[in-house]
Image (tube, rainbow, N blue to C red; front, side, top):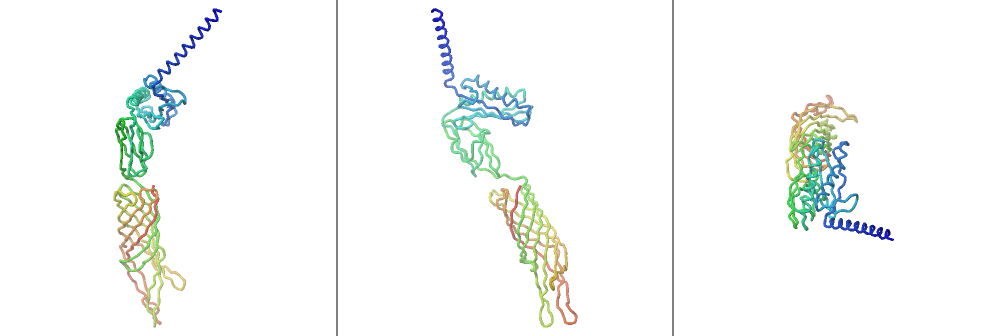
Length: 403
């Protein structure tokens, strides 16, 4: 009987002690922020540093467990805060990015980049963890947020190296104090700056993005051309043609190489025969191979970009005579040309652009051809040489692929 009572008393005392310990743990944990640390990502490309994926989080857990105000949770338990991160670099120069995310809002409550080598990186991580935890516990204030907008809109917004969305962002909750903002958008310069979030207020940020100045840009394209000659003999007036080209732009200057082919152009001229007139039928082809140098002004225009410059190269000319159903090559010659060019590129910053262009090519030497002057009953056709000046004025447009 006495043994039974003693046994029951001991059991009861153990249960009471266990209950008191549990309650003490609950009381001591009450009011603390819960936090969970995830495995870090290895971006160094070196497998022998994979152990840091767990070593760094374990160092952070150890530091937070000694820090009053946080209760570290294990496993996948729900928590108020989540620590994420990654590391990159090499053994002698490691960079560890630590981000503490507030689970309820999804925003970055605090972040920091830690530098060091293999011997010092864990100690540096511990120091940074203390600073980040202190900034959260002491600096947290209700109603503190950032409102970020850009011109143009649709830019990616990073706060403390964490992507939070695209502009405009009407309200993003954050801790008071200084934060780094990074703004990125294709075709525009990346912007980085610091902003101070005032406690209990919404701090508004508006930034105008500057177009990116491409230091080097390649283009290949095709165009259709129409030839008119208002300033010279109507030798090739009205011909259609095509052009293939390659261009390399370095800053504000663009050098190009092109090949242009003008399709068949038919020409008739009259000569006298006894008691009437006759027609001689000629047609022509020509091929241009040359280069151009353009100046592209750095205007702050998104949709169009004007340019102007000079062209030079060689013109290959073929003169055919058509008679009795047969074509005879009368002359083939090459001439150098030189002249200005002016144009307008549409959507110059996109991967595919359109353009319209005008060219004026002055051929430096005249072109000669033999023409029949007259034909008599007794002597037959009489021919002589004629000289033509050639000034090629072409207008057209095309499409280019930029890379």
